[in-house]
Image (cartoon, rainbow, N blue to C red; front, top):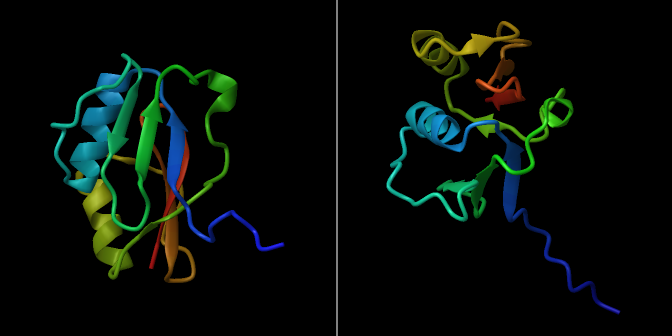
Length: 117
């Protein structure tokens, strides 16, 4: 039997405590529009290239659900520029640039995220 499951990532859910604040933060960092509406009072879809989007969800938030390890990565062509940009944005950087290829940072809710070259 052929698998009906596609070899493709759809959306990624991120638990957030405040949907409006999370929307504003992610859209500012990624420089995307905040014009999409908040759905059902707790969901916001951040438009992305390569996936159907990042879904910020305040309904699934609980401190114990915050990502303690990155579950996906944002990509960049210039890791040094990305690091400097995140510093300028006041983002909480958790590591320096490791092995010339990646670094970790936290969103305002403490979710551990990664940027890779």
